[in-house]
Image (cartoon, rainbow, N blue to C red; front, side, top):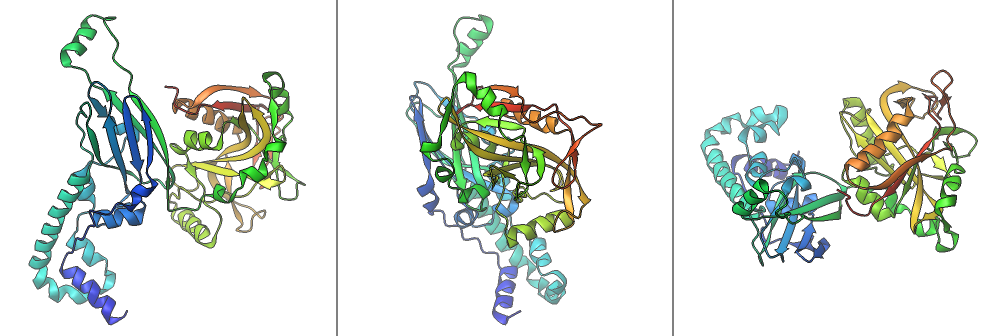
Length: 441
């Protein structure tokens, strides 16, 4: 370790410096604005580096992601932001500041085994404590000053500030709900006299915000080249079902010589609608690289979660999946995989995607993978298929759903196997989901 970095760390150990750049606002260049007659709303999501510069501490390292909002109330009455629709696990400004407070114990532990070298300097602890106390107090004020105040937004008022949410990378879905407020007397009157008048519906706007930090696998996909306008095949309600049933029954290997997991899902909607429907509850998958492979190996060895872990390649229509999404649980070995391929079909002016979904429930040894291990899937693949329907219905993003044939029936007593040898059974049906561009509830 060189002398300069060592003394630099020693200086930071003894003197706590807190240097936020409160005037920094470059992240607003990516802001998105939506409006309706009652409100005009602007949203921006700083990157981890931008948040660190603005707030003076690495909030992303502590699992916090600030979301900037500006709300203009154009309605005749007051509105209130429902923060839980943005993130039910949001942090209050002072809570977010507290998570990031400076601590002398954390500073010493950063030196590890070398910390004993600095014990003679503990005589200067009062100086450290004093500067840390000052810095933490200033941090509280900065977070509170920039936090979004949860109070009624009166007619004609414009307010702005940060809501401190949990971290999402790739695409962050921000659901902004503004509830109209009415006088207490009027509210009690409606309660005592049902039918005397209905309260105005809330303002509901959904923002899909790109957040730097991961290389999602679909970023290198040219959907216009995969599905050029001249190749689009419109389907009527009468011919949609037979066209879907004629789609390939299962995924294949790269050569197309072996079949794998069943293609048990169909989704109808634009890419933007698809991403908006899934991204609030599912995570995108990163491309395979040395960096992401190492992150995957670490998560595997430690039994931890890696929300954006790359998904192995399966093939349909002679190409790997166009989009891969996943829902992880306690560890990387427990997640639901969803792969989607864009087809030439179109229904009601919307693209049709064919997909495959399965649930990882463990890890096992195999000679069919380069790393000699593979995820073991739940053989009841219909459960994973139906989970997708239930999840999207709960998110309010389904216009219609049903089933068609095409996968082929197999039973638990006579299962089929995927490319790594895992058995699966199915009733032979594909779930078909027509997505809604906006929430239906």
